[in-house]
Amino acid sequence: MPLSYRENYLRNASFQYPEFIPMHIGISNASWDQWRSEMEDVVVRHPSIWPGFEKGKRDWDHFDFGPAYTKGVPFRDAWGCVWETDINGIEGVVKESPLSDWANWDNWRAPNPLETADRGPVDWGQRRRDIEAAKQRGDLTSGGLPHGFFFMRLTYLRGFENMMVDMATEHPMLWKLIDVLYEHNRIIVDQFLEMGVDMMSIGEDLGAQNSSIISPAMFRKYCRPTYEKLLQPCRERGIHVMLHSDGYIMDLVDDLLMSGVTILNPQDLCNGIENIRRELKGRVCIRLDVDRQKIVPYGTRQEIRELIEEEVRVLGSPQGGLEFICGIYPPTPPENVDAVACAFEEFRTYWWDGRGGA
Image (cartoon, rainbow, N blue to C red):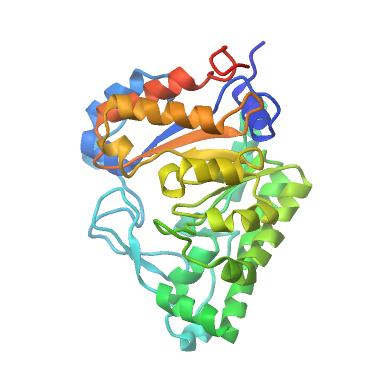
């Protein structure tokens, strides 16, 4: 019998000879709003990529982009940060930081993670029921921390420049804030550990276009201890940990893996395919973030196909350890989304159907 999606995913993440490469395409609400029914036409042609999708279910006249994603509507999150965006469907940026002045510390409180998520109330009872229902169906189950759970949260709360100065000068208040963030995130991790999920997903944007935002030395001093305390309990229970980061992160790889990351989600062309092969292949499951800056939004169908074929050949193997995610954002046209889907369908079994020599 063919492996279920869950069985195949976990085999792939553990280098235990899966039957296909897990491949996903995530379409942003900004792209849905831009292309609407034209994008739906693409999605319905590829049920292997978007199983169960039904055309006509979206109400385009009453589209809810959500907090921090709606143009012209400032949003104050549970931490007190005020977000604004200029494009519907694209996450905004923090315009007001509640701890921009450390003098505000005594009047500031972190949210209670048992009651409030970053952008609204949380129902842990419902989350448990959803996880149990997924287990009953045999689906892959996952928990996670909000994107920007630690390093980025520090910059949101203090402001980026203030935080960089705090780290450079070893400001004593910084350690207090780090303790608060650790405890907040620990409670969330413990909830998912109790549920027995298959994996934990976390995200931080640690890189710029050509270098990491934070130096390896600063990461080891201020971030890695918290990462380790949060992630090691997951690894002790055999739970995979997937970390996403935009930007160039090759100089942080060793610290991320030693912290407990088992599935790493780097951008392909930003980090360099050869760099990713040299630094990551065989050491960690690579959840490759397919280019969304040049080739996918602006390239031809052939260029998109050639990119994905190269990445499968260079980074994949019969043992597994490679998966793909492609995020779709404006101005990517529907025909290029179709090209990605076709390439994914063509190459997902490359290493097991004779083409890859398996």
